[in-house]
View 1: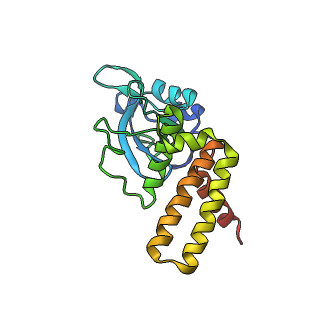
View 2: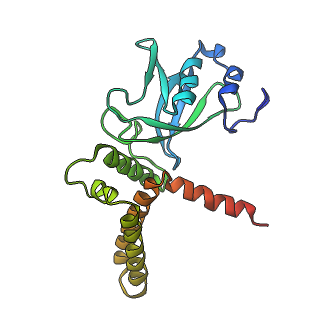
View 3: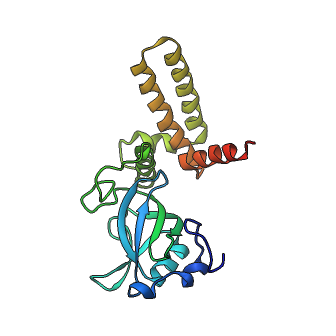
Length: 214
């Protein structure tokens, strides 16, 4: 990508020197959104913080109060898994897409701006909760137990829930269909996570198919 890269195009580490850090005292505001498009928080990045974000694949900010780099989640464990970085038309603001592994706000909420407002925002939060259960393996967790049983068992559950959705659609109430659909989405998200995939990857596949249509 050259110095003439368009706003909204994904950045690479090589593009860092083309950003307007000098315009704002060496720091750029970084808006953090999840893969579902919900805004989670605002931080600030220096050149080094953005470079470390690319290197670590986890979001790193610059603390203006401590005047040093800090990786989100370094004390809480609730990291932001880096997906992509973009800039605006003036190259002085960053939009960082990242996958949360737990609550983003220090108050324990998913977003520093209240509840996420993207229509499917909770699915991203659900994936973060699933990742948290897989990592921590808390006692009594259904997610942790099912994950430990392996891909075959998780795939079996997705098949079972798919049948339940079909039956509910044919002969049950709308509320029952919603409940069974929720069960299916949860088990599908868990199965995808076990293979290193996400619902956003499914969305990207659908988007690509749509774009390929004449």
